[in-house]
Length: 224
Ligand SMILES: *Cc1c(COP(=O)(O)O)cnc(C)c1O
Image 1 (cartoon, helix red, strand yellow):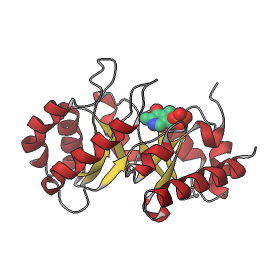
Image 2: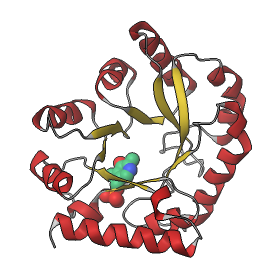
Image 3: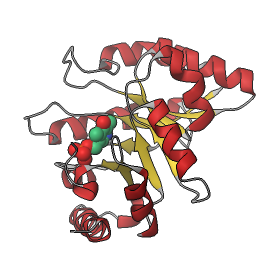
Image 4: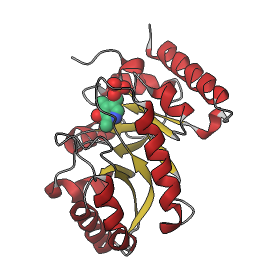
């Protein structure tokens, strides 16, 4: 299967899942998750109409952006972000989905402030409480809300989660949606995105309200 065919299939599956849930397929943005995917394949996907991409490593992402310059793609950062890479990430990526602690949010805020910009972020929530996972624990997130909403140079636009492996993901997607609904008023009208769903579960995520699905293998094939 070519990347174009894979993309068509994934788009169809998103559309069907949206219809099942009474949603319009246009409410769901498809992001290509391209860690370890070479730029030629990203170009193929771009030629088949994909514009939004997610990278897990700052330098790997920047290298690809440089190779693909001129294509007008939008790259988001979706991986674990180390504090010393924040500046580079903010300079090159359109948004960060994996803001996983108050400390990281403050660092992004400081860097954006120095640059005189307001930078779009998602808060990553660790809904399973697994220690190996990054993200705010829910109670940690709720108690950080006052401080988070006082940061002037980040613009929170949504929440992100990765459900635990090997479990039914649906309750985690439901929980993320409920969390967003519960705190919607804290961050203004642009705070509405739910970044959830990957190759094995994006249809369930769409049924439960995802506005951005991050799909790697179903588009680009298995990673080496
Ligand atoms: C790798 C990755 C994805 C995509 O995973 P697939 O199973 O290949 O679809 C999505 N989100 C994040 C944060 C990832 O690291």
